Image (cartoon, rainbow, N blue to C red):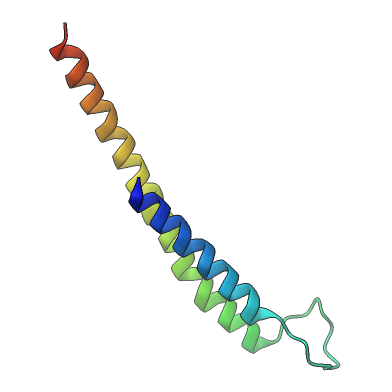
Length: 80
């Protein structure tokens, strides 16, 4: 479960960092709804690893649940 907290903390930290980096306080003529190509590239560069991390996290969580069930099954069989 420490790994879960570490992964969650990393994701939260990365999300906060990305939010802070994506703030644009300049007074450009560009619409707020139209991201610049630079912001889009940065977003895509950050999104891909985050999507991969979510996939890895899901794989780890699924494996942990499967292992936990197997241990519970063995423990249950040993007591009967």
